[in-house]
Length: 190
Length: 190
Image (tube, rainbow over all chains, first blue to last red; front, top):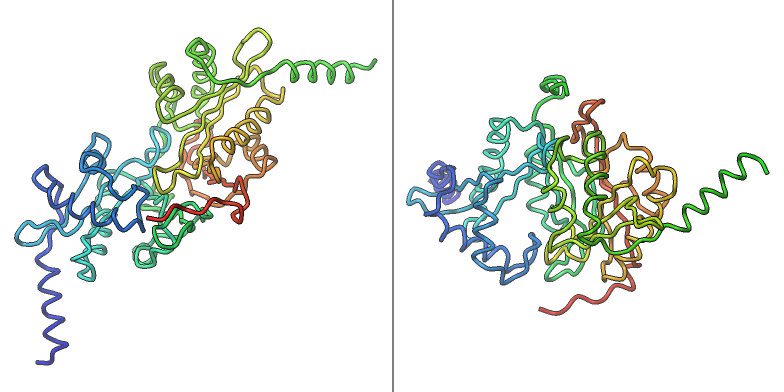
């Protein structure tokens, strides 16, 4: 068996042992470690480096959001996402989602796994479309992943993000319909 | 003097007697009357018809926002706007703004007046760009006004707004730089 085959087997083993489930308060230590590392880099989220654990907790656990974690067999958190209506009331049929993957777990397919899970979960919750408001253009891995999962860049926001290394860079608005409009439920009469 | 000339003189008189100043708690009755009428129509904001006065107060008066009113000589509120950072921290150099004009005051130039005021005020507060996240595509008067004031449609969000009469319609993301990027302040070093 070649080294390449062994490596592939290991990756498959890793991926099949990863589960996605609703986030619990007991996941907070693992989620904070990931949040802090992602935010410290200053390359993908608008939170300033040094953002507090309390702000992290409020971001992932609040009444408007439903949060999920990807965990390994030992219940170690490898990544997380949340769903929230992108607008209230008359715009609440469009989901917004946010994702973070542990820098230590990159390349293991966690992003793809939670991305797919979030699309299924959004449909299950009755959302009709999904929108990302602020995908940083220099975050090429994220842009490529979202395109792979069916999102399109529908807008470009010039110099709207202050990147830690690159200075002001563009951000993208990405969007996809979750259900063909012909199959959307008729709006209720007023 | 023709009827047309008389009407023009009246409009000019009306416009010159309108002032824009910071909103005060004493403006709340007038602001609520406008908010309630705009929201009841269900054509331009995601708030559901029937949204409470408390939600209106929280929208216009909160620690993140600065709100302004356009008032006539009798201090009657004809319209209002607010500025708020569109994103926190690393995206806080981009302003977001929201505007409402009394249905009774339409055509008197209030929208243009508060639109121009908001751009000046955003520059005064140090913002470098301004973004609208959710301009309803069927609201042609608003789209035309924002284009007149320098905004461009930078994105289209398919069927993202449930319009009271038209069903699901597109919304636009509109954007403009407030200062040429060459004149932007250099980001602080980390």
